[in-house]
Image 1 (cartoon, one colour):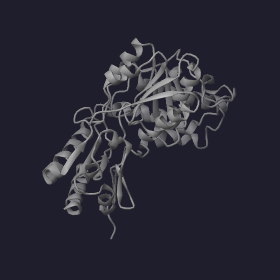
Image 2 (cartoon, one colour):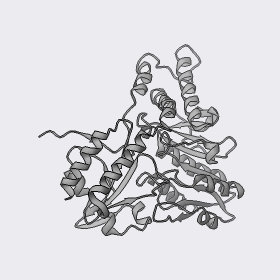
Image 3 (cartoon, helix red, strand yellow):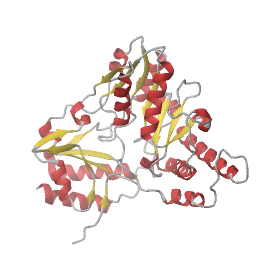
Image 4 (cartoon, one colour):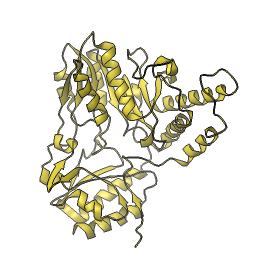
Length: 374
């Protein structure tokens, strides 16, 4: 029996937008030159890169020269954290982050501890939100960087970035945010957020995998992550991947028209209402009820195992927040940090909606859940 495929894992990866595919087409064969070459083949390539840089900058509302193209969100995070540490290690060695960051932030911090960095991993409340006052109390005379994600990939909770940035600015500390999950879903204007560095991941915003960007506020001291020639104004060595960069630029351009489109939020809320109607107290929401990404719904199915439910939801692509090993349940670090009891969190499933999600798909998934869970 062939099951209808329903994709509800847009936080994991998004498909390429049709406009992105169209924009990339000429760069598969026609425009193949090196953007660093000063001749007829290199000039179109260079202009394509700079046009994409303007498109990304327009979405973030920053200067084009403040955008550095990378291979993705992980590289952007590594560049921000390692780059600031090695540039400012003579000034201080203390970094503040949270317990619920993506591994692309947590692991670079742990790596830097081998080089003398002292890292404070701040906790969060039961909604997955950090308290700005806790961040401020963690600051020492040696603090050089604060890194707090804009929105959590698992539960969708949006952090009080604007409040934290005011603290960082008042204490003359650089502030980085991993905005991989928020770019294209909510406003990420760097001046409104007050950040000095911001990471973008292409495949979360309907662009290709393998490309991203790092916003670096003009004047912020940072050591290159990749050393070599003078690409990206000397900040990231390596010939630019024109094809993927063009795709990212176009994706950022079209993302603007979806920022305040209520359709996905309405679908998510409708989804939650249907789950509440069918499961009542057997379904518990993870994440902040208000300060949450408009597409993200993370639900605990009480007394059930999320991975077992997903395995029986034939054709449905979603994610779980717990892993089963030899009969024992291990919660994700995010759910652990939120203080979710294992008996509750073991039933966690993340449904993340996207531009192509329909009401019919939501209704089908709810009907499947009723059959499987009951």
